[in-house]
Amino acid sequence: MGENLFTGIAAWLSALLNAAGVPLIANDIILMVVKFVAILVFILVNVLWLVYMERKVSAYIQCRIGPNRVGPKGLLQTVADIGKLLSKEIIIPRLSDKIVFLLAPVLIFVPPLMIMVVVPWGRDMAAVNMNIGVFYFLALASLSTLIFWMGGWSSYNKYSLVGAMRVVAQMVSYELPLVLALLGVIMLTGTLNMNTIIEAQRHTWFIFAQPLAFLIYFIAGVSETNRTPFDLVEGESEIIAGPYTEYSGMGYAMFMLAEYANVMLVSIMCTVMFLGGWLAPFGWTFIPSWFWFFIKVYVMIFIFMWIRWTYPRIRVDQLMGFGWKVLVPLSLANIFVTGVGMYIYRAIGW
Image 1: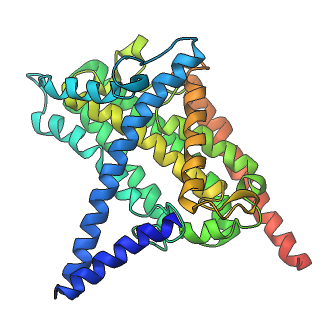
Image 2: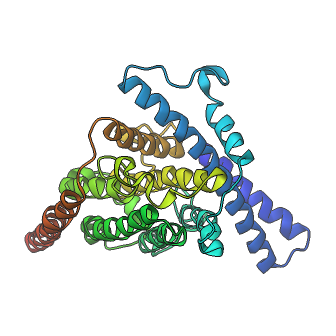
Image 3: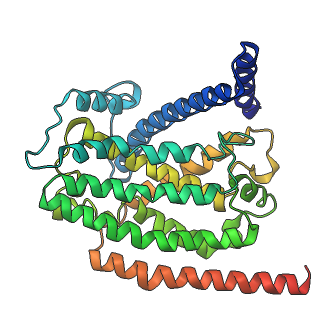
């Protein structure tokens, strides 16, 4: 199967290094570097594809054609745009904090890259099988808030500063219900290991056992990725582009590409926690496990895009009120109901 190919390549490379007399520590370091490079290339290629996919999805929803000139079916349009942005000058505002201003777009891809290391892409296809994988995932994902704030604050622009303040308010507020929604699944499985959580869904995916948690997670995930109807961070009609207002060229492109990387991360976590990860539906195990994983991830990404081009942007007060007055109480109620259900289940002895 496909997963045997990937694990076989890692084993072959490790054996080759051992045969060459490379010390064990150096062997592990080289293997990890190779995995990091492979993940980085994978992220960049997928992000380029997701930009194209978003343009096509929005075009069909709005009865347009979308990119159709550069390359077959417009497939090279995103590549051409990246080439254009690479050739543009990066303009640095005179009063900005130049070091922080230039550092923010460079650091924005670090959390997604580090998170992808623990993702189980298929059976035995995680670069690092970490026992606290879910905690690691959430801890690193929250670092994006600081990086967005760095970009907005260092720009010395009032629109950028307002956008950065919205980032902190919005992402911190919606991280709480997002984490609480995942807590129900963690209670049922008793582990933070992603592979173990996937294995626990062999008989029933947790979207059926935790439907409210899935809905809360999805809504909070839309907000965490700054997608419509929760795209207040870069509300074009109000604050131009929020924390990205002063960025040009590749600096702006890095922030935009990071948005799609974050959408993919939220969809990956949803797939792992609620949709059975790489497990095949209907017992169709003759298809490689990584294929099912990617199908589920891309279905979630499509729903993200569908929502973006269907609903209008809401107001800031509605955004914050919905998070604190609706999602947080519902997520706490879900934890309570899950705890009661587990107690009754164990008391009856099923």
